[in-house]
Image (tube, rainbow, N blue to C red; front, top):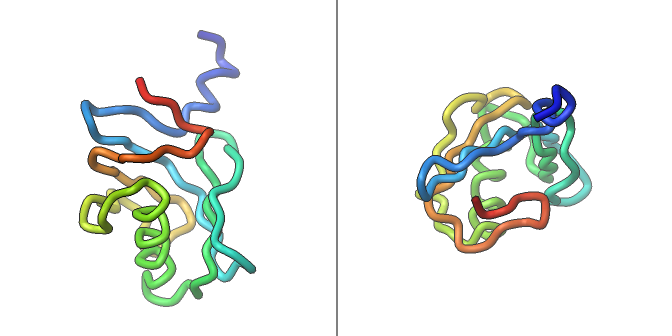
Length: 101
């Protein structure tokens, strides 16, 4: 694997759990899963960044996108930061930027 490839690793599988590094953008015009930025997936949400509310909103948005309930998504770190890591248990759907391993 080339050094350049290592920079683009923004997710990994831990059995049936998807571990996902997120670059969050709160207060966006729309909710959207964006492009990969370095070792993070850009996710924009409309919610304001007040006391972790944008993260809670993002978890709800991503739950729908991955076909799971919000309780199946754990925020490992970054609840009040734009840099987050999430663990998504047994996602039923995946965006194109993520592949099953």
